[in-house]
Length: 308
Image (cartoon, rainbow, N blue to C red; front, side):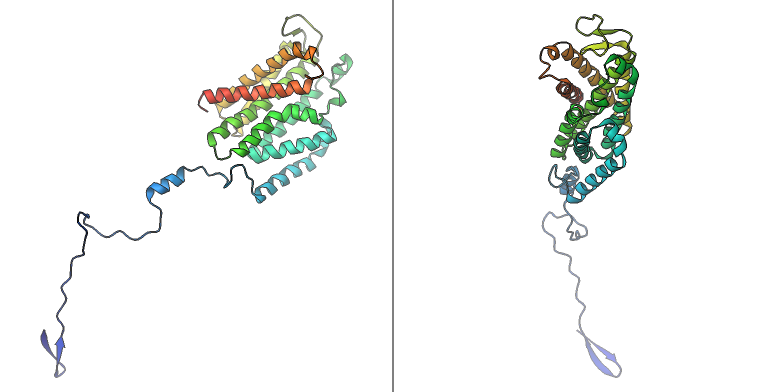
């Protein structure tokens, strides 16, 4: 303790305290103390980043999302009602509205555009060579308008893929495979429609797929060179469109074309064999459901084998 003279008086000065080194536990590394943080450890952060960013409940649509889906689909149907009514019956439009809602919810706007594209291309193909088809009695019944059965004969497999994608929304790999099946189902049906309509209007030589004998145009199970190439071109154009819209990759687009070719030939085979003997059960709509389901299944199988 020291005495210090200041201002004519004496003041006692306290001794300076010696600085003590920080107490460290044995084996602790030297250096500044880590700051307290509420952030999760790096391991937990990495785990969170790896989790799929899906909906909280797989397959569940929030009220806001569902409202957007219904609003978009309903607006399209209202604006395009005149065009829709040219290719669909009134009840068929209602069923198509449900199909569009499911596909939009599962595969977003890009997938919805593909559904609309199928309808437009399919309707145009039906109108090709109309006079020739009417003269030969091969033009579609009901002025070519699609009934509810026709809607599901075209969209059953796509709706199944869409519902499965909604149910397993958090599984990215599975959804990729289901999206490929969705595209392949419509590519298959469009290929079949174009091949049939072009073949009925412009097919020079139509043969039965089982016996390869010439048969009249429009015969179930019959194929033509013109129709076959037109169907291949239609599925290729549709699959490329799906690729450009980001629904499939280039490999997936090629897979869809191959699957469509296999499935349409299966449909011709069924038309030439079982459909003749069991026409009441295996009508055109049932055969179409089998065909598009086969197209989707073949595409998903190939995609899975390739490692998606």
